[in-house]
Length: 505
Image 1 (cartoon, rainbow, N blue to C red):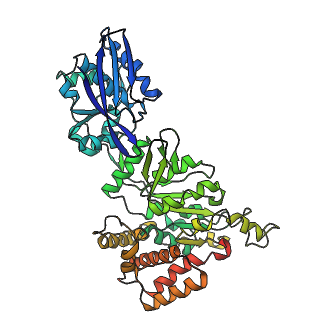
Image 2 (cartoon, rainbow, N blue to C red):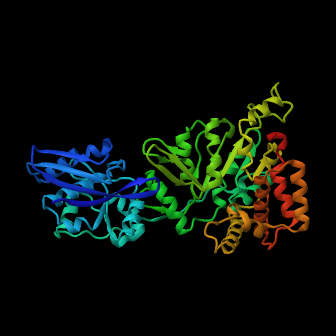
């Protein structure tokens, strides 16, 4: 008779149920695992056999066949060890079969029977809850999984402890959720001397999740400004925290089961590969754009990234998700992030300083910035020139607003947007506005409409650029607490889009 256990396979953040079937067949003793296992899954037979031997549990002299169903779904990872062991123990009548079938299991076995942590405990717990099953996982993963339903998460530290629970000898207590991580105080915006226009752009970007690019010479403060952006963003909502934590769980980045409401800040190096940025590689792991979901992706030295890497950003920026195509599956990851890019105006960085610019200026700037294609540049709502700061400004005491003051205005603007879009779950901030909702919400007054049409004709705004100006203007109005979008909101939004034409063209 076939014994069954249940576990999951991962396709992006989506989970697919896998039924682990174990049967004993007459013939030469052996241990076979079928159902498209990868190398790590195939090696489970040796880990399971050694763990059972460590507990003095002998296998019968029969052929053991383990089938991972559905058979055409690739199985990857070491988390299949525990469900294979449980199905095998049920097949030899060490464990009651009905109890084994009532749980979803995942975990890696060491040779002595210790359960080792694996990735994906959080999405596995969500799947188990949807099937009205308990989850059994390694102790190191219990605090993470318990965020879904602590009463139905069991987290033994060894296979022996799991057996003792199923046989009623020593029942396990439910796992406790991990601690909510408190976001540490980041760098303060008041420490930035000068750059008032860039600070204003940061505030607008944070309030409406508008993509932003800084262009300026080396040492002008572009990176320093970008690293202060997370402090302006409000904490993630419980739903956002769960969505982001599921991605980080699959990447193995959730530490000690702690869930954080701090928005992620990813800062990849400009030599990063396409798989590192977008996602892919073995197991189609999430990339930097997905790890930055609901947070900030800061790409310094933007023109230095490989051209294919930059061009792959275009669709995720628009769609808020990335699809990694494989021969037999398409893996989806959410990636609704705020992109902040920083670039020098040319390779030497001093194109507009006649005393320091290279002999090829201004042609060197045109060649350098042309690495950023027009369609990609069109997706930046805010384009800000960051001039060098004079030594006299550096000697002056701080005069700008602290991060807490600006963050309060950003939070108020976000609250207005949350109330306005409460009947539109697909829209959370102004950057998500599209179609009729954009026309209705961000429609400017007559003076603003005339100004926008004039600018569109004169500067050749694309349809995408036209709509992005409307979204930014709506955010500026929200920061003021204004009900309608007016001409001065349109004017400020246009100024951020057209000011760097001498650099970008």
